[in-house]
Amino acid sequence: MTDEDAILIGEGVVLDSGAAPLPLRILSGVIDLVSVYALLLVGMSALERVTGGLNDAWIRSVLIVWTVTCLVLVPMTVETLTRGRSLGRWAAGLRIVRDDGGPVSVRHAAARALLGVLEIYATAGMLAMTVSAFGARGKRIGDYVAGTYAMRTRGAKRALPRLAMPIGLAGWARTADITRLPDGLALTARMFLARAPGMHAPSRVRVGTRLSEQFAAHVAPLPPAGTHPEAFVAAVLVERRDREQAVEEARMARAVRDGDALRRLPFGIPDAD
Figure 1 (tube, rainbow, N blue to C red):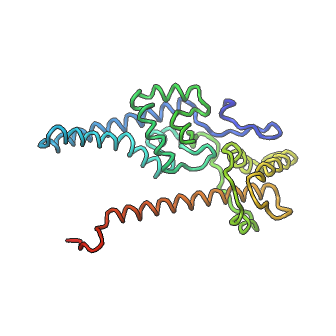
Figure 2: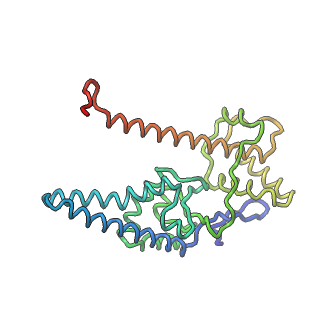
Figure 3: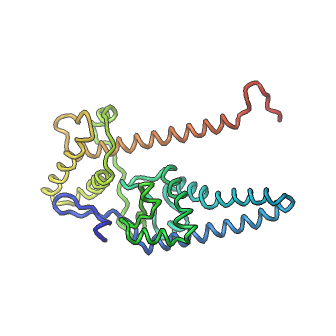
C-alpha cells in the first residue's frame, strides 16, 4: 500500500482506501478491451451482411452508430447497471466507486466512457496506463474527471457494513442543512466508523471527536446537545447517502417519463394498431 492509496487520520492511524494496484487495472482493462473489440467486429460483420443493399453513405452511418454504441453506450450502461462493474473488473475482482467510496451513477459512467475512447481505445490503453502509473490510486484521466477510482473487492479487506441511522437522530437529520463534504473527509469518516470497534479506546474517542468537529463546519443546525460524536458522523453520512439516492431515483424516474412522452403520439392523433 503506497502513501497515495492510504488515508492518514488522527493518532497516526492509516486507513487503506482499497485502491486497485496497476497490474489488476491493466488485467481488467485488457479483458474489457478484447470483449468490446470482439462485440464490435461481430456486430460489424453482421451489419455488413444485413445492409448489403444500401448505399455506401448509409452503410457508413450504420457502422458509425454501432461503433459509438460499442465504445461508449455499452460500457456506460454496463457500468451504471452493475454499479461500477464490467466483465474485466468482475474477473479481476474490482469495482469503480466514487472518491468518497460511494457507488457510481450514470454521470460518472458517462464521463469515464467518453474519455475512455481517447485514453483506452484510440491509444490501445497506453495513455490510461501511463496516467495510472503516476497518478494517485491508479486513476486514469476518466477517473480524475468523474471523481472515481477502482477499488478491490476480491482479495481485499471485507466490504464495509452498511451504515444505519443512529436512534433518535432521524428527525434532526431530515431537516438539517448538509453542504457537500470533501471527498477525503467523507471517506476517512466512513473508514473510521468501520474500524472504530477495533481501535484503542482513547484513540477512538480523539479521532471521533476530531471528525465530528470537521463535520460540524458542513452541517446546520448541529445535532441535539449530548449527541455522541460517532452518532453525529454516522447520521450525516447516512442522510447524505439517502439524499443522493433519492435525487438519483428521481432523475431516473424523470428520464423514464420523458422517454415515454417522446414516444407518445401527439394529442388528438389516434394510435393505429
